[in-house]
Image (tube, rainbow, N blue to C red; front, side):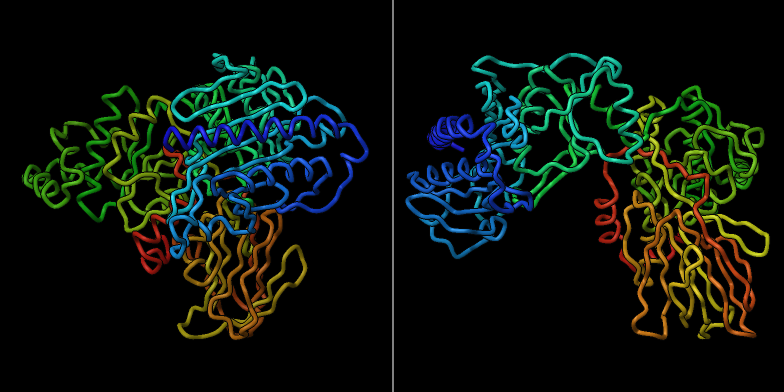
Length: 618
C-alpha cells in the first residue's frame, strides 16, 4: 500500500470512527438500542445499535471517491464506492478475471461496528469499533496477514489504539508496549474458554487473575498495551473481530497464534473463524500453548533406540544416534534385535565399505555418518522391548515399525518417530532432520501429544491396538455376517468382507483405504467401517470413544480373523463376541513441530499417495 492510499484509508477510518461514536453513545443503555432487528450475516442477532452504526459506515464507504470491499458483521460482504453498493462474495470477487481496471477496488475494510454489543446495551464501558484495512491484490485471496492498518476505538471512553504494519502501535498517540511478565502465576489472563476443556481450566487455575470483558477487540489491545499478559478465545473468534487486534498486537511485539502455536493465515471472509492464543512475549506464549495442549516437557535422561533391521541404512544411522545421545550425557537402552545387528556390523571386516556405500546411496544422511564410533558395547545396552524403562523411545522406521514397538513396550513411554518408511503418518520427522530435532528434545524444547488406544476383548483375553482392528474372513473372497452393537444397541447387521474398528490415529491408514473418513486425532471417537459391504446403503459410523462396541459373528461354520495394528492375529468363531473400548492408558508422541494434523495429511497424501499408505505397514 503506497503512501497516498494509506492516507486515504486512514482518512476514511477516522471519518467512520467520528460518525459511529455519537451513535453508539446515543443508543447505549436504551431499550431501542437493545432491540433485536434481524439475524446478521455472521449468524448472530443484530441489535438496533449495531444496525444504525453499520448503516453509517456503509454510507461513508458508498460515497467515498474510491472503490472498496467491506466485510462487516451484520451486512456481510459488499462492494462500495463512487455511489455504488453491491453484495458480493469476497473470495469469488478477488479471483475474478473479467473486471476492468477501473472496476477493481483498492481496499478491503473489515469492520465490526460495535464489538461488545451486550456491554453497550447494559452500559458497561467495554465496547468498541474495530477497523482493519488491507490492499486489494486482484487474482488471489486476501488473508489476515495482508492487513496493513488497524484501528480499535473504545466507544465508551474514547481510548484509541492504532497500528501500521512495520511502524509500531500507539494508544492515544503514545507508543505502547506489552508487559514483561513471564510467570504464569503472575499472569492476568483475558478471554473465553470452553466448557469441558480441562487444559483451559488448568491454565485459569494457574493464572493470578482472569478477566472476561466481552469485547475481543479491546482485550487483544489490552495485551498489546500491558493491561493483560495474555488473551485466548477457545470458542473461535471471527476474523472481523481479530483482524485489527492481530496487527496491533504484533506491532507492539506480542505473539498471536492458533491453539497449537501455528501462525494465523486465515482468509478474509465473513464466515472465517479461528481459535486464538495471544501473549505478551514468546516465553509466556509457549507456556500457555504447552498447558492448553497438555504438552509440558519432562527432562529426558534415558532414551530407548528401536529400528527396523531389514535395511542397513537405519541400522547404520542408529549407531550414530546412540553415539550422539551418549556424548550428550544421556543413558541409552537398545532393543536386543538391533543390538545384535549392530554387533554383526561392528564385526564385519567390510564395515568401512558398508558405511561408504550407505552414504553414496543415501546422500541425505551422508553428513550424519561421518566418524561413527563403533567401539560402544551394544550388548551392555541391550534389552527386550517389554522390559524397556526410558523417558523416550526413538524409533527408526515407518509406521509399521512404530506400531510394532508400541504394542510391545510400556504404552506410556513417549515415542519419537524418525521416518524411514514410505509415508510415516505417525512418525514425527523426516530422516534429514534427525539431529536438529534430537538437539531440541535434549534441551527440553518439545511437547507430548496424547493418542487414544483400543482395548480388544475376546474369550477372556485382552489385546490392544493404537491404529485399528481388522475383522475378516480366514478364507479369501468369502463374506462374513456381522451384528454390530454400540452400548448394547444393535446399530447394523451387515454382510461384508470384513470390518475395521479404527481410532482417529488409524483413520489415515487402512480405514481411509476402505472408504472411511479422515478424523482429527483430537476427536474423541471410534470409526466403524464395513469392508466391501453387500448392501449399498451401509456406511461408516463414527461413535463416541466412551462407548463399548461389540461385533458378533452370525453365520454358522464361518471363522473370522481379527488383526490388531497388523501385528497380532486372533480367531473368532460363530456367535463369539469381540468387544472394543477405549484403553485407560493412552499412547504419547514426542512432537517438535507445530505442524499439525491437517498440514501433515496434505503433505503425506500428496507425497506418498493414498495407495502407498494403505496399512501403515512400512
